[in-house]
Image 1 (spheres, rainbow, N blue to C red):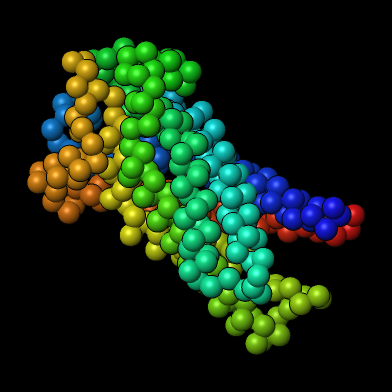
Image 2 (tube, rainbow, N blue to C red):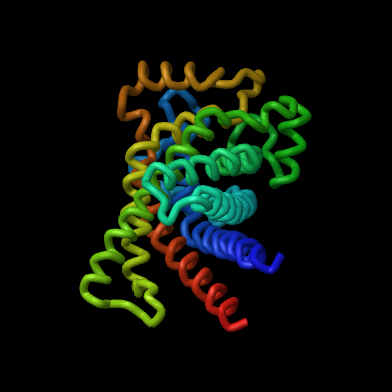
Length: 312
């Protein structure tokens, strides 16, 4: 019985560290998330969505016309979703890694990929309704024809009442692809780059007592940003498709996109490859520093919790 305790503690330490990292990330970067979402859904065919020239101009325009409230539209579901997502992600990820490690000494890149994919899929199923509400709140602009949602709970109730509970899972298919592939690529890249850096440092005898590797805050920040960049470049089209599917239907109740395939065909036909990467500048500016911050916070808190457990 006593032997199982460290494993349980380890998993919950990962969950706590992941939740704290996700919260810090959202507070830091939310205005850029609003800009990214508005760029993603603007296919040039909708008249109620504002047109922005670039990310700085979008931030300035939103701040001027909508104030701080506009820049932080959808903040509550973003905090809720990110905190839950990161907490569950790190928890499921560490649990999957422990399961795969039960009969081997080291995980291969393929098993890192499988662990991350498993965690991403589970998190997506749990949090999709939160992300749908966040997207809709972020897209509310002055002059929108439909009655605006007053907040998170009103949006949830209105979606279920007007569109049925299945509407809460709009964008689930590209969301699953996004969560599974993005997280898998990011965490696999992180683990492999981390291993390379640790080996490099080990060869230079930069070790702390007990044989654990000594990585600095800058190391964790660089690893987080590099792994995030690789994941974004590969998976960004899934974000665009998900955002477009999660838009609120028009006043006639008809959605702009019927399903993922329809959204892909329409985007490719009207906008070409560029359409699948709308808002990527805001996304990179938002996510690269955020990924650095996330992994710095995660590793710092995890190391603190582990140190406390060792002392106990």
